[in-house]
Image 1 (cartoon, helix red, strand yellow):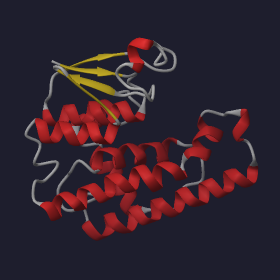
Image 2 (cartoon, one colour; image 1 turned 45 degrees about the horizontal axis):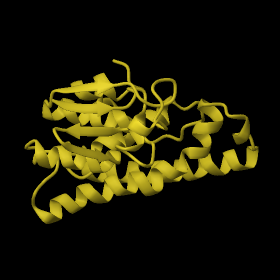
Image 3 (tube, one colour; image 1 turned 60 degrees about the vertical axis):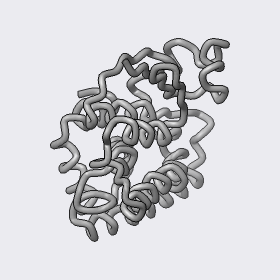
Length: 207
């Protein structure tokens, strides 16, 4: 059985849990990370030298990096409906997965630390305003893409890209800031809430 190391509240762990739900992959999860077993132990560092969750073990195979993990699971467990084999269709999925990691994820870092985690090191008002502006700009990009497809991030059908993006949309709506009107994003959020995997793992790790 697939072994998943990481706490269920982690957005990156939830990518893996949601993917398993979509593909009906049985798994056992262990709590690792802040507030649970330390990822700085020799035992964990032997699995992931970066000391980050999630890590999976699929038999004798160990893997870390959440986006790599979900791609592996889709390829390993007959997930072509989520991660197409055809190169152009797969590239469209990959570009949005990578955009989430490189652009969207980076833009929310300051607002998240300031407004949600309320870290005293992230209370500069100018830096917060700049972070919110960048985050809003990226969400506007997503809104235009969703308006174009009329459904999901990479096209008419739900794909692997909707897992990291969908979790990001949840983070956007759950962060206490003034949200610009993004009708396609709002409709997308409602659409995702119809999926069992999202109801289980997409909303801050709670049903």
